[in-house]
Amino acid sequence: MTPSATGADPPATARERSDRIYGILRDRICMLAYPPGMRLSEEELAEEFNVSRTPVRRVLTRLENEGLVSIVHGVGTLVTDVELDELAQVYHLRLELAALMGRLSPVQPDAAAVERIEALIERCDEQSAGGLDHMAFARLNMAFFAEIIAMIGNQPLREISERLYYQTSRIVLKLLPTMNLQEEFSAFRQEMVEILAAVRLGDIVSVGHLRRVHISMSFQRMLRRAGAAHR
Amino acid sequence: MTPSATGADPPATARERSDRIYGILRDRICMLAYPPGMRLSEEELAEEFNVSRTPVRRVLTRLENEGLVSIVHGVGTLVTDVELDELAQVYHLRLELAALMGRLSPVQPDAAAVERIEALIERCDEQSAGGLDHMAFARLNMAFFAEIIAMIGNQPLREISERLYYQTSRIVLKLLPTMNLQEEFSAFRQEMVEILAAVRLGDIVSVGHLRRVHISMSFQRMLRRAGAAHR
DNA sequence: CTCCCTACAGATGTACACAACTCTTGAAAC
DNA sequence: GTTTCAAGAGTTGTGTACATCTGTAGGGAG
Image (cartoon, rainbow over the protein chains, first blue to last red):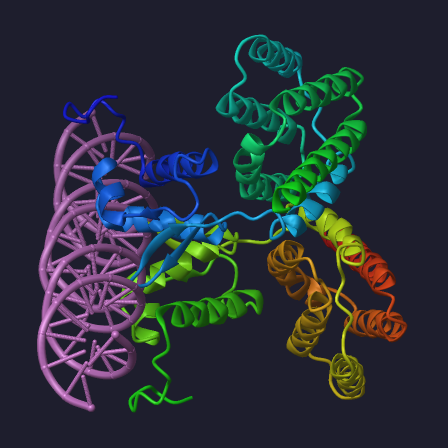
């Protein structure tokens, strides 16, 4: 927004600026604004954020460690490709980790969190009524995930769950055009309703198991579609 | 060994040099050669490895992302401290992940791996016969861990298990002087014997459960010692 | 004697120039 | 026509000077 000409942006500390750029680039990759295979130019990014290549490289290295880009000397920084079969292991692990959240010092969500989940269900209904949108689905999914991880009290598990989510979130958006969008919206709404009921009971163990079930079924639907597309 | 005066080291690619420096620093931190609280100088490290600060910073940033050091602007790069109660969450997660290894596409170890484990048990006996050494215990433990993670077929789970191990390995070495070293050697040997039996049967599920049991008991022994020391 | 403030030493963060590497393009040899 | 090689453009990796920040030591006011 503000072109920094006035320097209206809070200068902030180096760490905060780095985290900000990281978050922006991660979201662009996860939302496919930077599609798989796209080449990211350090110089262009440096220009966009009004910094030199050095802090940009710091961010790109972090994204590489998390598997979202691949840096190749002399070639460039490439957004990694996502293939369902290559991410099968990540999905299997996500299933098991989801079931763990209730066992490892879970956090009881407060009333505000319950209201936010209710609002998400409402937004889901509004979308279903109007035109269905891929991007809207992805954003709702991400917002709901934010509520889920807030219930994970075990900090290492929370960080790992986040990482794995960002690694797999793209495959959903990528395959969505080939799938039944209404079915996906419906399944997602059902998941939120069921989890909301468990949240109201304070039963985080069940929240974890419900998550596990729905991640598994979502994965199975994608496998079926991918298998059908190959014929 | 070779002081690089002759340049005998294979020049290697940038990635390999970076990984090499990373591995060296990680081992030094995990072996307490760099004790918690120690300040690492980018300039000194750059001089030691015959590079500039730039690649050193790349490695230190990675170590920070994994929680082994803390970089503070204007202050320095400090080796993070390890406290048992702060690492309790990591331990609880490690327990559950250990139990998962048998369920997620485990890798059957070959005959050579079985022999290496037998050799580790033998080395453990030699240590028990001679003078007991903290460093020897840590090295045996790390070597055995290498055999364990080789059985983890799920790649993301393997990487995560490695990270969490490096985060907790220091606390063992730190508390070892206050503990019964002979008891620890004995328990460790027992773990290896039991797991070897499961490996011979090709029962990786049991390997995982045995790991879980022994990680848990090791943690409980440390908790008891730490509690006793506080009085 | 205590407290505060200022200057300084030393650390990490940033910018920029250059080195090293990859891929492409084109022409020349066969 | 095919192949090979060399030169060039474009990218990331590295080295280095400087900017920015922090903790401390020292001196002066009260």
